[in-house]
Length: 352
Image 1 (cartoon, rainbow, N blue to C red):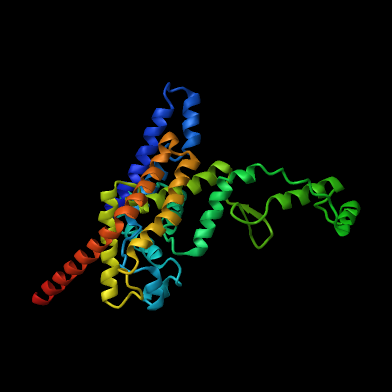
Image 2 (cartoon, rainbow, N blue to C red):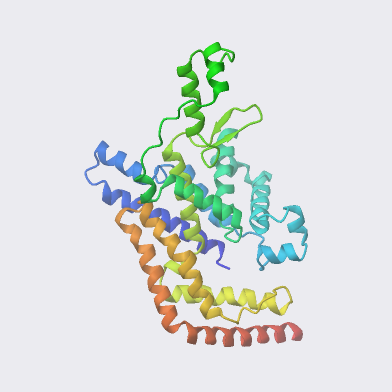
């Protein structure tokens, strides 16, 4: 797997690119330029607490990883899977280990620096949990939630072009009668009943709004900027997690080989139900096409990196192109070298 240092470096690099873009886009140092930079960065680069939360998340997100996917731990009924109810097992384990360590006496100064008050630490913890959990791309339900949040924050063009919904007319005879007779004290007139009905219609439960047992609506975000910030942070974390696919081709091949070795060793120990050497070449092309390139395109769409946002998509497409042309031969080489390497390691262990 990508090491904590590499993931953290990728997260920091993503932020540094954001900061340099802010500087380039804000030449003149006027208040207008500053506000524009804050808007396009969704207040991420201006908030050191959020930036540190992202680097911290990248640093801890694979702590305690066992070298096999969540699906294997669940199938084996591993104690971690039982503990975390089969939900994002390795991610929750990493969070538990990291925050338990942070609670120790020797890290209390760091803890107070992260957040002097309980409220600040609670917000930090919430940000970190969200960014670590989003790296579980095998959880289909979570993927759908992330997709819905992104679409709510950055609606597709066709959604923006739709006409605004028609004002709702009160068609319920009971509601009309209640408004007219003031049977419900919340309705002092038919106009207020109409306002209530339209408000309920526009504030559907979902990504933005939830409800408690009293029936009170709970707003998840103060404004659209906060929603967009959440969606962008999730995307940046996912990009950092697979940053090797959006860097040079040599970097991609290096980490692709290490990933194959992890799967290969797990297979030798009888922990994988599939043989990673089968269709390894084809599977990487599918991963690029269905996950990596759409993810890289989000960086351009949200505008958080300004004109530099297209760099991610460029490298992702270039790496897919080179892998399509050269990957079959590279895959054979990886499989051959890893097989020999693992055998040598096994023999060394026996001799010891």
